[in-house]
Amino acid sequence: MEAVKKYSETELVLLLKQRQEAAFSYLYDNYAGALHSIILNIVTDAELASDVLQEVFVKIWRQIESYDDTKGRLFTWMLNIARNASIDTVRSRSFQNSQQNRELTESVYELAGSTKIATDQIGLRKLVHQLKEEYRTLVELSYFQGYTQDEISKMLDIPLGTVKTRLRTALIQLKQIIKPA
Image 1 (tube, one colour):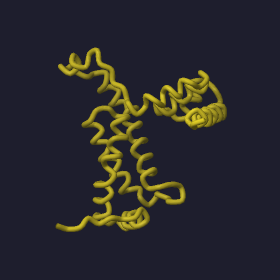
Image 2: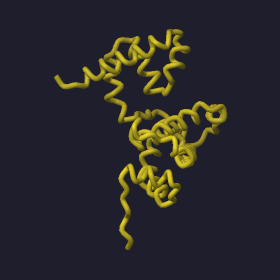
Image 3: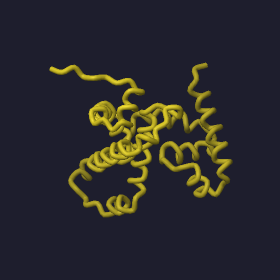
Image 4: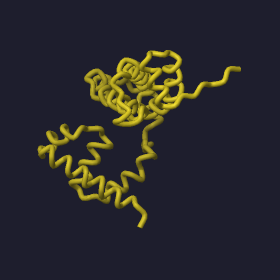
């Protein structure tokens, strides 16, 4: 049995930039699960989430040259690619149409009366509801629904600078709420 090679982040990025397939396989084996979970939180259809995951890894392979380690870790960079691809998928016209034209299946009856709760967000939502309404709305739109600050500005008809300031203030207040006394 062959020993599994482990790479440091720096080594991995260097090998990926050199287009080493072994490094890409290592990247996929070690990060696909985490990225798939992130995608699945946004794109709730498992089959579509798997397709998005494949697209994400193709983007990573093609865009590895644009990764800059001074701006953040490799996983954070990949996470942003996955999140953006997921949001783009959900916002796409074809996805919207497919959601409207879904066929009712037996699972609809099984799920009737049940509620889907993202357990990782239960506590955070409680904390967010402690904020003033103007802050709570922005946090909901930005972090739970995935809208950009610019989109929120246009949607709520408030200046972009105000959106940024209020979100920053909301995050500071959340940090104070979370901190144990």
